[in-house]
Image (tube, rainbow, N blue to C red; front, side):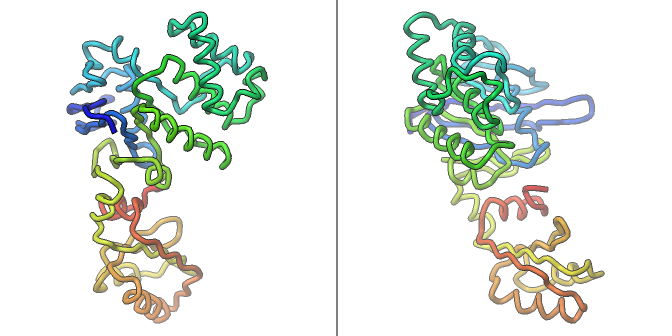
Length: 314
C-alpha cells in the first residue's frame, strides 16, 4: 500500500430540511487502499459518494481528495477521480467502443492515447469481444462493466464505485469484484459502497459501517469482528410468534441480544453449544416448533446487529 492519505472526510454533513442524511462523517482512506462503506439501503452511502464526487454540495464540513477540497477546488477533485454510479450511465444506441470514444473525448483524450486507453479498459472489463455490439443489447452486468471502463479512461488516481453489483447475475458480479482487485493491484485507490457484507469482507483493507447517516464503526474486518467478542449468531425460524418467548430469551445467560427479522428470531450469543439446548427446551414449553436453524460465526452482520440491534439487511 502506498503512503499518504487519498481521501479525508472532515465533519462532512448533508441535510434536507429537518432530515439529516449524512451526519458529520470523519474518516480517511489511505492511498492504494480498498475502503468499503457498508450499510443498509438508506444509510447515507450514495449521498456521501455524491458529495465526494462534487455532484452534491455539503451542508457542513468538507472533504479532501488527494489534498484538494470538494468545497473550494472541485475541478481538481473531478480530474483525479473516476466515478461508477449506481444507475447505468451510457448511450444505449451506441456500441461499447463508441461510448468509450464519446466519454474519452469528453474528458479530453485524443488520438493514440484515447485508442490505447479504450483498448486497455475494454480488456480490463472483459468486453473486447463485444465492443462493437450495441450497448443497449448488453446484459445488465455487461453494462455495469462498461460503466466501469468509462470511469477508468482518464486513468484516475481514485475510483469510487457506488453499489456496482446490484441487480446483476453472479458471473458478472464475480467479474466486477475481480476487476476491482486488479485495479487495486495496479495502485488505484478504491472507495466502494455496498450493502453486501460478503463483498466488503472479500475486497476491503478497511471498512466503515454506516447507519442512518452516522458512522457507527470502522476498521479492518478482524478489528470489527472483535467488537462482538467472538459471539455467534443463531437464526431460528419458528412455527408461530409466541408472546413472551423472545423476551425470556433475552434474559438467558450468554445471550447478548435478540431481534426479529422476516418472521425469524435472531440471537447473538457467546457460546452457541451452551445456549441452543435451552432455546429448544423453552420453545417446546411454549408449544412453539423450531422449523429451521442457522448458525453463523462472527461476521460483519453480527457486528451490525451488535451495534444497532437489527440485521444489516433490514
